[in-house]
Length: 408
Image 1 (cartoon, rainbow, N blue to C red):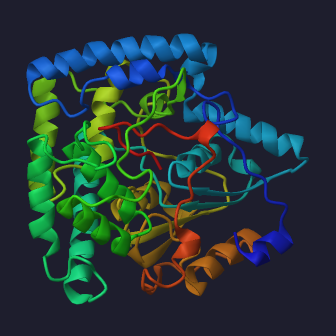
Image 2 (image 1 turned 60 degrees about the horizontal axis):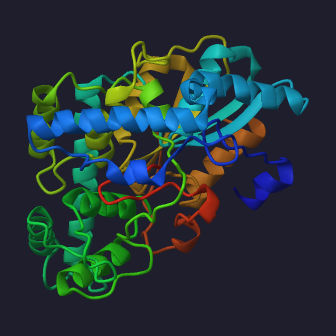
């Protein structure tokens, strides 16, 4: 948050239920490591994964307790309103980014007259069915790959400038498919195609293009990688596992392998380099064990009698596609105002005086930007260090297993 916001507000953050210090969902490290590869290649692997995920859910539910079944966003909305009340605030002033935007949207639905200002950045569209979720994620991640490749082709600072991004990327994916790609620090554990795709996807968040280019060169050369990158999760008695929250908010359960592989094949046509959006491809199997009914299933967002919400978005967002914010704004109608940052990465706040100033003016004085407000792109190398995601403390870290996706 900017210095100006710190001068004007006491800023309060919290861990949503099921996460970190708000009674995290936990599972045994052994059960997580036993889970098969999350992108099954045939019907037999799909059914084996369904059995394993069912066993994993039972393990996590037993270790977490009754909270396990109550981590959907509608319940977090009630928690957020309890925090507002406990702070003595008549109305809520809120900034949410990424998955936190669903919390802001559903707060405005449930408590519209308690909204002072809700600034939502990189928005989730809760109306998407499974096909739309897969397709839009695939288009977004391919767009981010294209932007990375285009930057590398014109930039001397790209470690792949001479070799070419697509040449090396295709070679690395082929090696991963054959089980031949390795992190030299862990030579006995193959780097899977999903791990490689997920790692690139994560580096598009910044975006960290120079880092990613050098990482791909090092992988191609068999050189040492930065600590913690593409490293297996170390077994422990228990590990945090926040994915059930998404399974309680989105019904992404494929009825069988035929339906699942149909989504993957369509994704591969939309994302010829990246193959699929890694979150979509893996959430479908992860959520297989979620029982019916889903507590907070997809539906259009409807807000009435609220102050308009500010919806920020980047044009080339790899995780919450630009299309999601546009779709949400259409659902909200007069209760939304969109701010478009014409650049890259996940999250628009902090990119420029234009994006930060627009958010701050809204949060401080409830000044809405003009309709169609856009902010010019800033070079990703400018002021990037402050935007890079920092690893959380070890005791609250999300597991990164071979083949498990990253979660924003």
